[in-house]
Image (cartoon, rainbow, N blue to C red; front, side):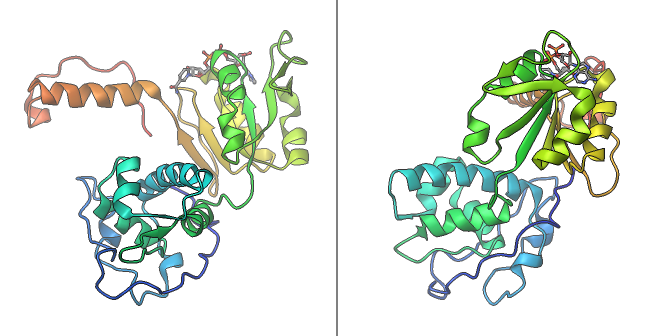
Length: 281
Ligand SMILES: NC(=O)c1ccc[n+]([C@@H]2O[C@H](COP(=O)([O-])OP(=O)(O)OC[C@H]3O[C@@H](n4cnc5c(N)ncnc54)[C@H](O)[C@@H]3O)[C@@H](O)[C@H]2O)c1
């Protein structure tokens, strides 16, 4: 899966207050076996005038979102600065990795002081494209969709639910958290009118591609898909697939490995059971 980096806003200039060689300098941290960050791991931001044009690895993007959650809490508490160690601990990563991540977006701390919280929030938000809210349309207001639509945390983090769609006559016309459920036939018109930028698909798999096509036709370029199917989209449209069962399978793998029940070399081992469905992310 890829992350659309083309729309990333230009990085704000960062004052060069860091002392050369201080302990907050970006550190080269080798990444995991997927090698996802290897292409960027040997460069420091020192003297690099092209940080904003370099791709930010997807694993870093995911961690930036976690750092932002911690930072916004600190900001709300009135904190002016935070050390890399404190921020890393709160985010659940090691501090070298955190410094490396932040160096990739051109952020650096000051020795003995740490990072300026409000400036770091602005820099991470700019990198994640969060300088303006993203109107979200959710399609399929069933068990999952209803729960997602009613979760206030999305709006609080810049993703207000602007539209809800379903085809069930019993649902169309009802409201969830003040937003009316409209018929899915109106997706193109309503999404265009409300400037929807993110579509969430929470329909059965059989309806997901059609729904996705309607969202794309309405100009939606980012889709979060909960349905257990792979969606085909044109170039320039990003799809992220969420599958909690896959996450649990990964957890299961780690538990099994800890207990020594997973052979080191999988291909030669006798498979326990073939999964009914292979899900790609
Ligand atoms: N990714 C995950 O971790 C995860 C977890 C739970 C459920 N799911 C998936 O999410 C989807 C929804 O699950 P659920 O339990 O809420 O199902 P549900 O049956 O309760 O809800 C589905 C809703 O989609 C609506 N719908 C059907 N066709 C539609 C269309 N063409 N346009 C608009 N709406 C339409 C239905 O009327 C219904 O309200 C399923 O595909 C399910 O497999 C994924």
